[in-house]
Image (cartoon, rainbow, N blue to C red; front, side, top):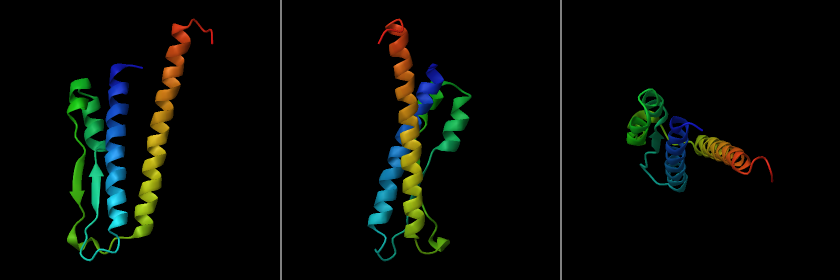
Length: 113
């Protein structure tokens, strides 16, 4: 795996983890009056940083944004869907890293298991 791909996956996992934590916070506060859900954004910054190299990728920090007051009431079904989507993306990236590690193990061992 090239250094840029590894750095992208690492940062994406960090962003997805943070997003999942804030979604959990949103769900926990679903019945709290005047609570405004919080979103975590990082994909756009990560995409832009990928063209500039590993140092730019390492500098990307997920952005936490409170939903606008006029966004309407929080919808629990959408929060649950976002949680499922975030977990699925996280699982996919971890699986990708696992496959890459298995490939490296195979190369190092000369194809012997």
